[in-house]
Image 1 (cartoon, helix red, strand yellow):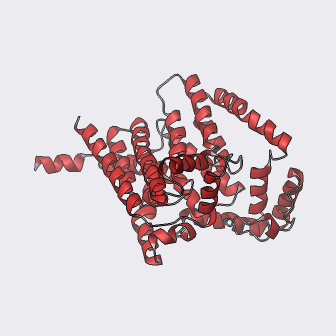
Image 2: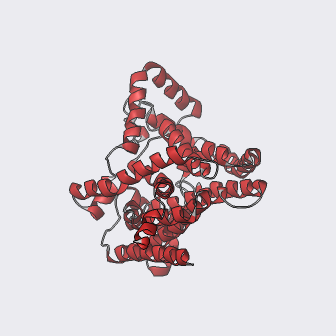
Length: 370
């Protein structure tokens, strides 16, 4: 019973922090992709690409609280982020123990990155929640066949928020207990969109163009350059044309190809930050360094050490969904700093498992004995 109260307190504290920041933030997210999503939310009908999930979320908020009511959007995202704390606790508890779940939830409640991105009109907060739902589906204590089908449905639905999740499918497939059932359900659910894309001529638009933008002479691995700035020009061409261009580049520019992959790995393990989106919120560079030193870097170290030391049958789905997303995204598409956010809850979960394995509540028990 005591642990239930601790969990409830953690979630309430996390929610309170998010709402205080949301209701006192004066940031006006009207640059770059943030303004794009604002515009899409105010248009009718919703677009197919970018996908309608996040614009529909914003449209609902604006319809209830008023057009471009940013504080309402931030508060709504704060609530979604608090629900992510609940998912982090439940997934970690099922993967290890209730104590590990409480530790992970406690970290998530005050983790800066899960708070700051709520103060933008970007897909990150909703993406984190949706991807955690995939890990939660893989942990459901139900028959494996039914679990695989539910996972496929949940996973396909994440594409409505962020198409980049398509790169996670190998990891999700490996994590499923009934892989064939998951694969068949996944293909059945995805086939209508593929057929529609073939008819419209956009079936390979996202993954093939993303691959082409990654491997070219002007790429550094993380800038999402426009087609106009690249060798083949602005006009969209056939998938085969882009694939041949990528193959030719990799074959004749092996050193630069390695440099591109290395640049994306530096984004994952490095000390950079998405300043364009977050500078109006965070302020000067000193604050970014503090967020890294007291936020991302400790969580990254705890998470990867925890994954290596504590990996097992009960928690393998956390590692596989995280690594599947990372590996294929780094290999096949531009990698931005904010793409890290989706895997940070998984690192928090492994951090909670690691801390629980090392000390658990022993330190508190000793204090009580004294």
